[in-house]
Image (cartoon, rainbow over all chains, first blue to last red; front, side, top):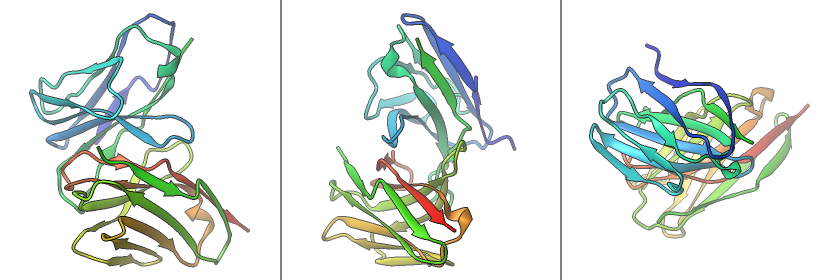
Length: 113
Length: 112
């Protein structure tokens, strides 16, 4: 099993550009999440999904969009990138079982210049 | 919404000593409290969790305590080792399958 796969690993964007961060899981997990991690600020929830076709906002959704057309994929879209979106982005998935917790992807380091 | 506060932000302890990290949460509906460890340049990984019907849980050198009345919970690491050096995050959630809100993290340094 690959677990949670994120692409790309690194990306530099210019202000105003758009991009999609990809996230795919092969564990048949219903629950998927996007977090951003800024230095000293922990992990902030951007969007989450409890199943295909269902998404909801987290703590910091502004400037982002998501879709969940399949159980496996949960892409994060950045429109009109801003320097404040420079961060490390982690996708995670969960089966909801207590003993398993979240499975995180390896992260995407995004720099907006 | 839920707010999780975590202290201290940085902690240095001598190898072999104990480390304690404390967290508070705001939403009385939260019932699930996981702890994640993130080594440098790596992804966070679950190390232990506790549910609200339990006051304490142990797993080898790691223990978590929960005081639901006071809305605080703590991570205790005994006999610390170099491989314990990492950033530790506490978190809170209403249920294990619900969204998790994380604290800001504690960077733990184990000194030789």
